[in-house]
Length: 198
View 1: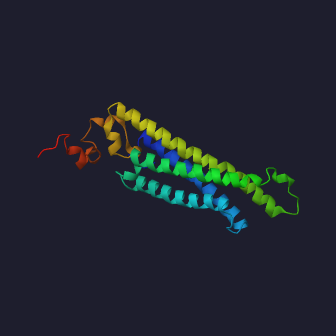
View 2 (view 1 turned 90 degrees about the vertical axis):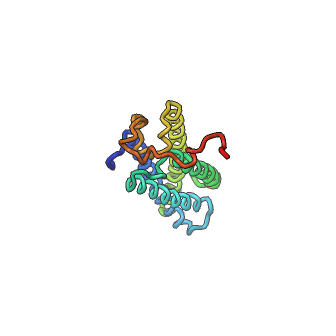
């Protein structure tokens, strides 16, 4: 891991890497299925398009988390938002695609031996059906667990969780403003009092 990553950060990056790997598998399967169907069916195109979008987003988030010390894309409010939105998109598109794939044969071994390319397509489709739902589960639970952890840390008085990336977050940094002063810098909006001064 990159220097400065805390135990929370190492777990977060491990989940992101696992999600990245599952997304690459979905992208590969969706590309194979679409090339067989000549990019015709929308049910096959949705996982392909969404996995490309997800790959770009995850690549940017991981790169910025490793490249910069105070990446906004690594902050919990950003991650919960991005993973929540991607979770909704994956759920919607998976429901659509799975309903369209219901007519595909479940037992790929029943396809006659002379149609090896169709049997391979069927096996790829069954694998894609499983992996798109695995990817949705990872997105959903990542967003939910990040939100839950952030709220619990905020309730414990660790308000600095919103001002630093999770990869470098530690509850012990709450009172140590000299160690990482950039993380402790307040927003301009937080400097205004509740009573307006005229």
